[in-house]
Length: 111
Length: 113
Image (cartoon, rainbow over all chains, first blue to last red; front, side, top):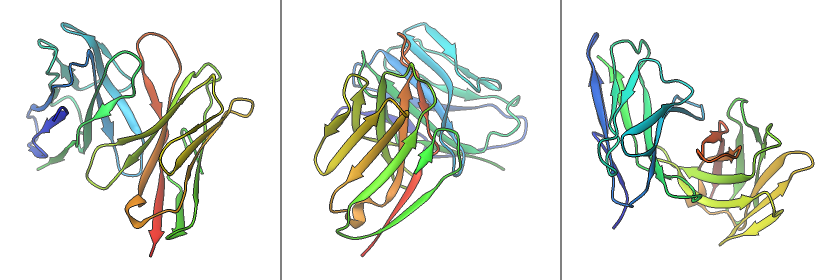
């Protein structure tokens, strides 16, 4: 089955530590996205990438970094500069003008 | 109902009733709208979409209505079932080639058996 796989499902970060969230898709989608969701809130865009080796900042990029070395993969690093990293992180992908397809998220907490 | 940018409203219905979830959008340039369903601990799941050249679109048990005059979108669920209990989000694409979506904060639908 084609889909988007996010790992791990739960992740804990210590103070001053960088952590990387994985997002892999086998849908042959060109565009990939990272969103942050806080309790009772909608999704806010962190970064997005329309093609390999290219990405753009979303609305809340500060404290995050991404790479897009392969079409299938779009990892997100939450750096120590992100002072409030506790949230549910969602990865999505799409192709053309189709609706975005989401993974099942990674919940990041602070130790 | 909800408005893109307001706090999470709730809707409680009886099993078998029809549900209507509302969404107001602010960008008159938006040309594509999507409804997603999100169950607890999972990612949003696509339900139905509609483009701005239409005012109604039907799927299986769901109908989306678009009123561009008042910038209003609604999702109707027929014969609501307990499995429909979830948070429902509307999202709009304001156009352009980068296909960025703006999400509302969602409506929590609870179906009582």
